[in-house]
Length: 159
Image (cartoon, rainbow, N blue to C red):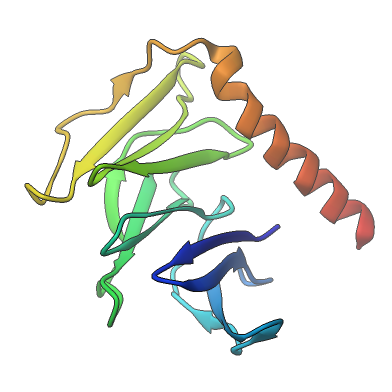
């Protein structure tokens, strides 16, 4: 499964390779793509991606069930995957959104099955201190997760 995002007028595509590394490529011309580039590390989830006007944020669940992130500032990636902690439920499906310089990542907690989110304020340069239980209906959160699971199922049937 791939995740595509438009950032500063260029289409970016993110996915996992067979070694479970996050890889990305960019569209260099109409339907012409650069080679895949690895962001290293090992992920247990497909990448969730969000973009603001200035940054791309990539999130994955690591082998320990915690969420990790990297960002692109228009020139380079942050050096290592930063941990946001948390322990999420398998199958690992997380989502990310961005609006008004606030980036939010969310997923289903392993201990109680509730949905949690954590936000980054790009202007302040700070993450919220803890994962917050979401007050949103689980059905509203389930829609993107169901879409991701259907896509994963279709992908596994093609192999």
